[in-house]
Image: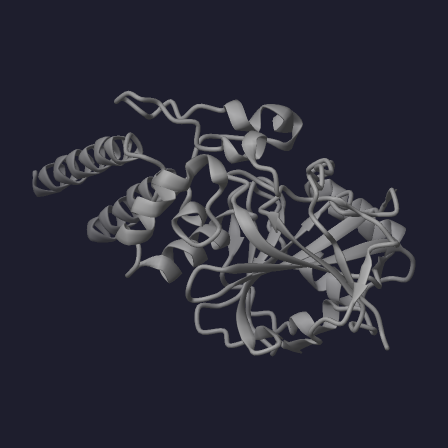
Amino acid sequence: MKIKILKKLSATIFTCYATIAMAGPHWSHDEQAEWGAIRDHSQTIEPFTLPYATCSLGNHQSPVNLSEESHKARLNKLRFKYYVDRPVFFNSGHGIQVNMSDDYDGHLKIGREIYPLIQFHLHEPSEHMIGNRQFPAELHFVHVREDGKIAVLGILIKLGEYNVALQTVLDNMPSEEGAQSTDANVALNPLVLLPEHRWSYYTLAGSLTTPPCSEGVNWLILAEPITISSAQLAQLKSFYSDNARQVQDLNGRSVSHRVKY
Amino acid sequence: MLIKIVLVAVLSFSVSCFAESGADKSKPPADSKSPAQASSVAGPATKENAKSSTQNSSTHKKPSMVDFCKKNPC
């Protein structure tokens, strides 16, 4: 009995340590204008650095306002090789997120490049805009390659029909910040969250939309949105609302738009 | 008595771990703080840090970036 208590205590301490060690300085969407100036107060040796400086200084930042008049180009077809998984439902404290299991093999293929799917998460309202139109929500599929290169697939969400796949995410998400449901044992194929038509998309070089706002991210935003019902949107907002970064300047970047030829 | 000794040992170790994590954070932002910068997605403001961190993390790129994106929105 006593040994069990000791084991639990040790596990708790190590969990706390691991959480603190992995986390950077605290940030929130409410203070996004100041992300670049947030200091890491755990630093004790000068010179002090600003860990999220790229959020202010970067000139290839995301999200952006996409124009329907974007450069129409012959781009690679996106091949979604997503499979069923029993993922972890994670309330990150900034949004709701679904982490694929460690041995998950699902990936996105762009031309000959393969990007393994790591997680997907939701923003409310949408981060990207199309022709100055903001959508009620946006889904981000985060893919990370072995060399560290990131490709994020953005899927805009409009009000409409009830979305069965999104409901699975909402129903299994823990409400407590930082909590994750490792024992959900829910089978989910991310493919069911994609719109029917996936051939048309916008693409540009951008950044993570949350600190540290690192650049070099390959952004792909599907032109066709998926739907969410009013009740589901309310449920999504009950977790987090206004967790979207404002659109950033293009600073001369070109946006390409794949259309069907 | 034995339980007290073990408890003290565990607490001491955890305190030393916390202290060490603080010391690590005083280093340039490379590993745990901004693993995104340790990969090929480094921002222009931290290119020098990214260069050094790329060397340091060449053998740990995948775990750091994947772990970061599982604990953060990315």
